[in-house]
Image (cartoon, rainbow, N blue to C red):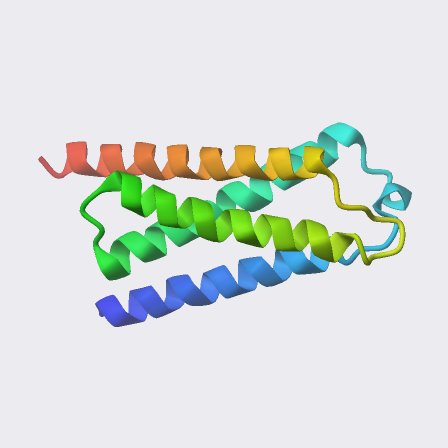
Length: 128
């Protein structure tokens, strides 16, 4: 059962990474009528979700005992993907790689960790 859950989580990660890649491949996103605020929110949600999924996967399949290691590995993995996503965008017509987008991605990474930690805290409290 545990292996099935782990496999499902990793499949969800691959699907989510594909969604982020697909959104990054959209040419001239300003033609979609999206505002700067919308773009910021999308970046934060994309990376909060990816981070949450990766933290869950690493926690469930490797049972890291130290939160710093769990979050550190997640931060490195998702940050590398965020950098590669910005690099990818630099080749898409109408798109560019920006430090601002990377900062919003990093904010999303932090939010994903906070959401996981809050959910884990609640779960521990409820099981006492």
